[in-house]
Length: 159
Image (cartoon, rainbow, N blue to C red; front, top):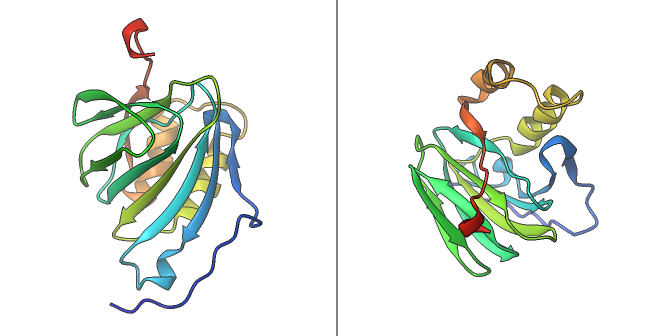
């Protein structure tokens, strides 16, 4: 496994996908890890998160700020600052920021994937609003991402 030097700074321009309340920075691109790992830092607007989806890569989420409702493999739970959540490859998962302020996560993706191209492409697909699940899945085929449900909606007891 060939890792190379990489320095990521807060001054880098983020990738924005406003339709899902997402601001994202790729902190460790896959080319600097021999495609073993990609690391991203995300900011999720209040009440936002991705649709329920699955893909071959494992994701490890570390909550830096805020509170999230997660669903991983049908299990729903609250994640707080400092919590670490593993979503194994192939397992359906989603999350939503359940605070009234932006929330942040540091996410490791194994093996690495081109998160820059994926999220720029997702932003293009969503440019004119949230597309239906068929349009999302057409986009996701290139990435082996299957969208299997809508974004999470927290119940009264989960907020």
